[in-house]
Image (tube, rainbow over all chains, first blue to last red; front, side, top):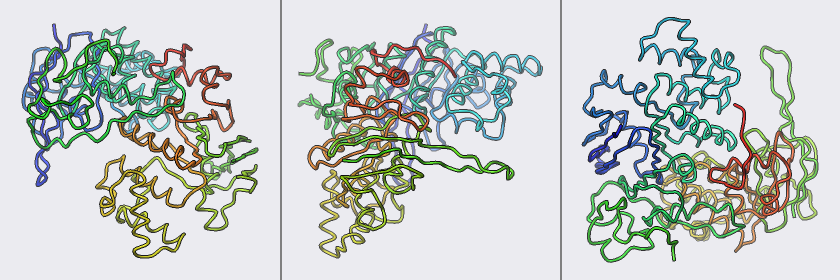
Length: 321
Length: 263
């Protein structure tokens, strides 16, 4: 059974006299319990708006249409009070910058325990401490007692991200949303956090929603890759390597990553930029940057078909000629 | 050729409540060479001293010991010509440009100051400068906030190039940029190195980029060099365990198999 079901979700941002920005357009998605999906794409493709709409953390100038069903209940129709039973409880979130997500004037102890008290109504101090310490241990923190009493600035970036993860998991959510969880961290720390997410996913049978622009990170953690472009899903498939992908945009994203197995070589580039999301056009939005663009692409807008939104998709297995 | 021997920089940090000062060696006896017209990558984690080396090379910090020699001459910064010869591209593109100055003026200012160019002559130089990094001349009339991150980084690179530097130092120039924009900027560095023969010192923590971009690599840890050599050699056979750890930390790198521990 699907734990998350998204039906024709669109999110618009009102920009005053600058018009309306269509950040998400008609997104349809079903995620099964225990599945891991990665949302990839360039900046401005709607990845983060997507993540925020899962728990209705949208900006005030936004307008959402469609449905986001978590366990069959529409999150977008909920009041703030009702959302308390979703945020943190059913879906925990880890954000990109741990230093900005933790409150600098409260200790780790207070921040973990506050979440547990607020959602699970646990007030017994001994029990709270037990739970917090157990969470810190689970997220791989060595000096649990010191970290438990510490303030965020006394911790390293990696420790802060582990604490964030502990808070996100404190109410045992089934879904974990990780929005660029490693971008702000050092390489070796990145690898540690990836290993941690992998372990937690397995141990807790989490449904992981990973938002990233790092395709390699996505492939490492998730079997199913959702590629977004200009507010739309353009490919939704099980992808293990470049040859599995069908959309020219997905292939281009693979191409621009420097190849670690090759010596000095030319960098591939996707020409141009993501188009402004203000107008709705009857054409393929990727057309101008696409190597495969043909006649049809300027005449009508492609629909999702067999997991890909393209008139001239690549066939699986063959590399770019 | 740039030759650095025994470079040292110590920061004196004040302890709390007047308990005296404690000394931290940010770089501790670093020696390396960068060949003329090559790209040298300096890698390492936060706090390893990457940026301190770069700041010493650009004359922003004064080293506490050691020597920096460029083509037989000591690297000094006592005249404006000498200062112009080493240019620096910072990570934060927004912080590198004055928000109240048009792009055109931001580029014109150093050209006017260093080369004394005026009016029409200055205008042509600025346009040529912008075009050399793939920015249209009319974009010069915009303010920094009107440009994208990638465009701003191009402008900053254009400004650095306008000084005809012998050495270009790029300190994490693509870390804050999107994947596709990263590729565009890296390809620009590649072009500058190949076509103009500019020597580049490229500071990064992304080892995937280094492999495709640089000729030589220095791996830094706690202010000391862990390993140095040609990029291909170091990636094929890393000698130091720390380099192996860094290489195995790259997501999707099958070559590295070392387990990662610790919190």
